[in-house]
Amino acid sequence: MLFNSYEFVFLYLPVVLLGYFSLGRTAYSRLANLWLVLASLFFYGYWSLDFLPLLLGSIGMNYIVSWCILRCRAHGRTGWRRLWFWSGVACNLGLLCYYKYLGFFLRNLARAGFDVPVLRIILPLGISFFTITQLLYLLDCYLGTVRDHDPLDYALFVSFFPHLLAGPILYHRQMMAQFRDESCRRVNWDNMTRGFLLFIIGLAKKVVIADAFLPIVDPVFAHPEGVRLSAAWIASICYMLQLYFDFSGYSDMAVGLARMLNLQIPFNFKSPYRATNLINFWQRWHISLTNAITVLVYQPLMKKLRTPTFAHMVFASAVTLFVVGIWHGAGWTFIAFAMLHTIGITLNHIWKHYHLPMHPVLAHVLLLVFLLVTMTIFRAPGMKEAVQMLYALAGGYLADLDFGTILSLDDVLRASSPHATFPLIPFVVAVLLVIFAPASQDIVKKLDVTRPVIVTAALVLAWVILHLEAFTTFLYFQF
Image (cartoon, rainbow, N blue to C red; front, side):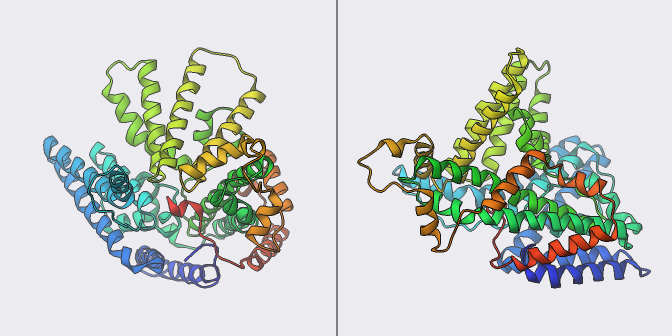
């Protein structure tokens, strides 16, 4: 079930809201949390019942491990506490590596001549997100920041449907107090209205802007050989916009849905394309992932060093960015993306450390070009296509007169669909929003919720619903 589908908007969401707030008014108001758990499991199982036992097993295993960690901590058994913690980490990483990386590893061994079986392993939706969420929980249990251990709240913490498939990544300290708060189970019309407005903003980002670039991005990246310089640059720029508005749209919808339920979850984006350096970009893009990997990788690395130096900090930052890169998936394109961003973040730290001068405009342009190149590699189906796209971006095919047919943007559009045209209005709107618009959360926070605003939002929703001709999945579902 997709956020951008009729079933979700007109059936699932109203039923969930009605059930949650109806149960919240009863003497057994915690049944509202149980209702959300069941609704979230239904939401996940709607995709494929085959992976529902995997999610339930992961929740059960991590709950037991976290309980053992807390018991050992309460009785001062430091050795056993450490053993249980690292056992939980191994189980989670083992599960993630099996589904996400084992197939890639075996395929490359087979290509290298080793006699190994090549497995076709289907990646379960959301496994990266619910795994990292539970790793953070185990770490909090180990460090002693977890004070309660209610199984119902824990199941809701992991499975909560707005964030389950593509984030934002949650921390127990952000959520557990809200799950226990009875006032969260009563209708709050301000939260309902502002959450619904944020949901509409996210839905419009996805349906009206991000999906408009599909006819350009998909054909070019599928067959980049012989693409003209202009078509390659337009396709790569369109992908940068598509990825941003697709994922930020999902994140806006997730935060909006949670707020309609009186639950606050973190925002994931803060105008990342306005950053002037790579460090600042990662502080603005997919913020919850950057923070999570910082907690799980960067901080432990720095704590291992008794007298950390600048070189140690650069090394830890580079390792962190590499983990962020390969976290997105198993493939040489993801590895190349991770390595380039690792090099970029290292140079960025060195540049700042030695106070080397650079004009802000030049810094911004260099960052955007770097992002365009690395996101082009990130999007390509394989390294062959990535190299071909980079060759096209450099104008290589224009210089190769013997190559054969050289595709223009019109050729690409005709190959995609006989009636396809360049989405000029979504393109202009996307660029203007990137340059000038405040972050979605700031818009909703400062907006005076008046009747004209509500009527306008309803009209926008109606217009967006009319554009739901084909339900496209969110790009981050692949990761």
